[in-house]
Image (tube, rainbow, N blue to C red; front, top):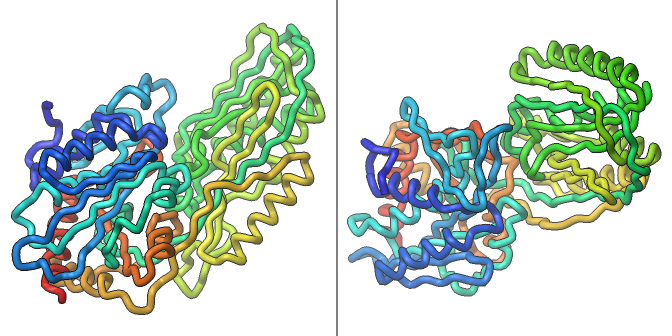
Length: 487
């Protein structure tokens, strides 16, 4: 293939990133990418395992002289979040990514980049392909469906793994840090049966919010980024107070991404009523835009009115949905002053949907403190009971507690200091990483998470610094060489 990324070393690292970017690998659609990994291993005579969820393990023997060193696991996930800008024509099920390099930064054209966690996939492939590295025996673990609940990591047969040192390669943000703990999470889906009235002719008022920053519901939840669904609920609530009937309200596509866009449709019997409502909506949208001028400068709300027909929600169901949204908990719920304001508990309203029979709200609570997570779940239970929804919890995964002693953490700190002359930042993250699942199933596991500078994850603003990616590989190679010297 013709490569877009040129001039960066090691060349194989960037070529592998481009090759996997050409393969669709949204969560649940990883088979082709998984098969690519299996073919890669077989071509090089490496031990390989693939399970029915398309998780892959590839093992590489130690480099000469390092056979006595304890084995090391490298781990990351194969899937990516599939988000795109409004109006972008891209089919994530069938099309690879359109990569663009600008001023040393890699992005995708109008879509998420998949650096989360294509960085890990490309890095492990480069390590497996590089016979000049000094390293202990390696177990490279590529998991699936991470972005939809860490499903692959939970399912994987961990008895196949012998390593008790783990380098997770899924720590996005700024380089120069090592992650040593993370929050647990659970998907909470609230559903309510709805009734629709008979088809009515009238005037359809369409509202469309776009331009919000969005972001990862763990990494950016503390940055006061607006939730498109909650802003839309504010608009619709005000409009319903003056009449009209709600046909639909929908926004967001992932529970772990802050919604950037939302749409609503209301029906009015008379043109004059629709025009008055449209004017009211424009005035309120202008007020919101002024409120968000400094934090969400690209916020836009398009308002249009046209003749048409629809089957609106019953008044009872419309009000239940909108009132639930107006009172829905969202954002940071608890900080830790002892940890410099670190977010301890939060939740994100990621998806709102209305179809012919059901209204659905999908939340994603996170916390590193079990009692605070339970408090958030209690709040959602009360919300559901109050407005006639049923709460269903799924895709729960454990947090990862800080270890008082961690030889691999010490090794990373020594390596970074020797390479750069700077101290490696030790951080806890309010995101979900797969480390907790491996630590819980494999007693004695010592784990850290590292990565290059990668920003804007879960949004089309995702960006990967190519120089940082190159430095990250050199850092990892040095850590592996030091691990090879351990006995």
